[in-house]
Image 1 (cartoon, rainbow, N blue to C red):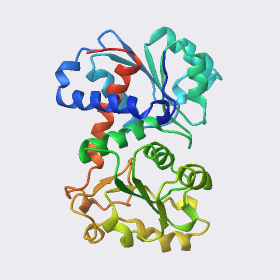
Image 2 (image 1 turned 90 degrees about the horizontal axis):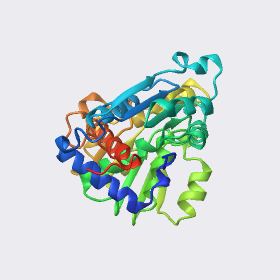
Image 3 (image 1 turned 90 degrees about the vertical axis):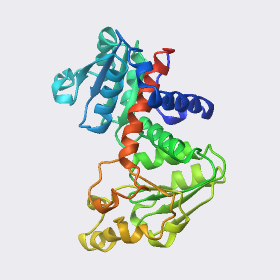
Length: 305
C-alpha cells in the first residue's frame, strides 16, 4: 500500500508513467469510465476548498467510482474532538482511498501511518500541496512537450506560497531548468528554498522585483497572489501591488509561446482581459488537475486498464 504526502514521493520515472497515464485518460475517457466501479473515495476536507475537493470528486466519478465524505471539520466528528488517527481508521472501514485536506501541517502524514487504505495529501496548512504540483507538472509537460530546458518565472508571494515551494522542489529534478523569482523583498523565497534547494543543487536562478524586466526571458510564468495581510503597512502594499497585475500591456513583452499558469483562485493579479490570450493556460490547468488525480487514484489503487 502506498500514500502520496509529497510530490517527491514519486521518482521522476514514476511521475513520467503517471503523466503518460493522465494523457491517455485525456484522450480516451471512455476507456476509463468504469475502472473504479465499486470503489469509494473518501473526501476528508477539514478546511474549505473548491478546486481540489471538486476535482478529486470529479476524478473518482469519471472513473465510475463513488464519493463520500465531508467538506469542513464542523460536519465531522472532529468537532467532538475525534483525532485524525481515529477518523482515518473509521474511514478505512468505509472507503478504498482517502483524499485529506487539513489546516495542520503533517496531519495527512499522521493519518497515513494509521490508515488501512491509501491516503492522498490534498493540502496540509502551509506545508505541501502535492496534487497541485502534479497538476502544474502535467500542464507544462502536456502543453510544452517536456519538463526540461525551461526558464520558469514565479511571481508574487514566494515566501508563504506552498504551491511555489512544492513546484520548485519538483522541477529541480529536470535538466537545465532555470528560475526567475519575481517578488517584493518582503515576500522573497525563504532561505531554506534558496540555500538548501536551489544553491545546494546548483540550480540557476535570479531574484528580481519588477515583472516587466524579465517577461521576455520566460517560457512559463507562474502567477500567485500578493497578499495584503503579509505587508507591515498599507502604504508599502499599495506601492508594490501594481507590479504584479498581469495585463495586456505586460503581455506585449512575453514570448509568443509563453504559458501563464496560476494555482487559483485569483483575485486581481491576472486581469480578465488576459483570459482570451492563447498563452493563458490556467483554466486548462484546472482541467489537467482532474486527469492527474484520476491517474493517481488508479496508480494508488493498483488498477490497470
